[in-house]
Length: 428
Image (cartoon, rainbow, N blue to C red; front, side, top):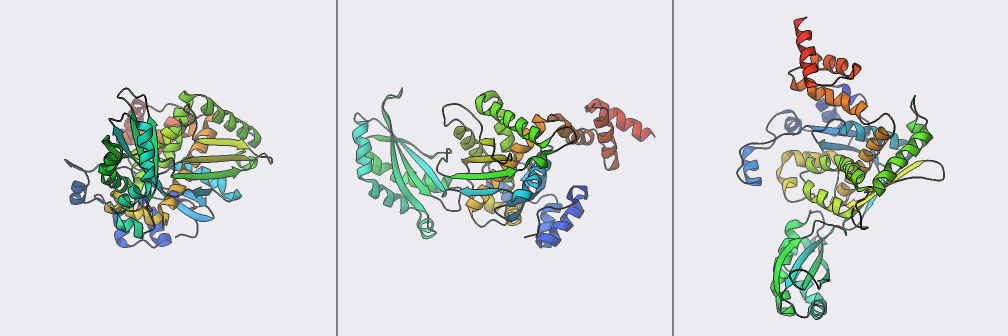
């Protein structure tokens, strides 16, 4: 790993110059740099095996967020995303967090749930106790289906049984297998176990099993991050640091009480989380599903983060959310750039990856709250959006910078304006 994640002047380099920095600091091989430099990093034959009816490959920009210090370790964060300002905002907030030690993280064990739905029961309460009485037998059967997972220290750990006595389709019993999936995301593992124990559960209860499937509400597989930032790091020409902190807390409180605001607030968090999940070949839809279900756990949809002021007047932020990610299986093993992203991160376990993901989400959330609470979201965002507009009109190289400068200075970022500026520039 590099001695520092700060990457000074990185944004001012050309893509080829950035690759040279990575080659030197991370010891990338020529094959690694070729994956990043050349089109077609994902071979068509591998793509054809990943999903059905493959006709091509769809690319996203892959950027690096710098400045992250997580549990005392320097971390650069690969992010695959199309939205301007995401990488810049995460990097800048990570920079503000460094003086106080950056981000502190923790996580629970990588426990996933498999659900087995049982119907056709006249005695659901009796069926529940019968399943629990045979708990060990069920767990042993589940574990017999994955000897490797058991060898690695994982496996089925517990059985829960939930009753739904008055559903529109009659009483239902839903059994949960709680499985330690180690460094896998775990979907295939828990689904296989659920299939295996279904006949035994029918025998024990006398009911009929319908669904046998994992739950994407990974409420036992939580990742947490926290950060503290002193007022002086928020000082600007227009705003005092203490004022900025109060404004950020007001903005957070809005999200905590209003689901309309919370939806956008949490989307901003996922602006940081999802690009890392995509870059590492993980299932971002599973992470999204769990995040938003978790945001409703108190009976209303609210914020995934909290922002407070401590006794010193520092802004302190926390996040805790489900983070079902893996280092083995799926695209994490088949996509060459996913493997390279994991090497850049330097992670050894799925828990490390989950903790980095929530730290990035916390940083991204802070970036959005700071912008919203002070100059407004558009000032920084539109400067980056202007680059996309300029590129879409056909501008290239130095033309892009000139069009961006003119549009931002005139507060007029529009496609037709970019076209007119480009035409005038080329006529000169």
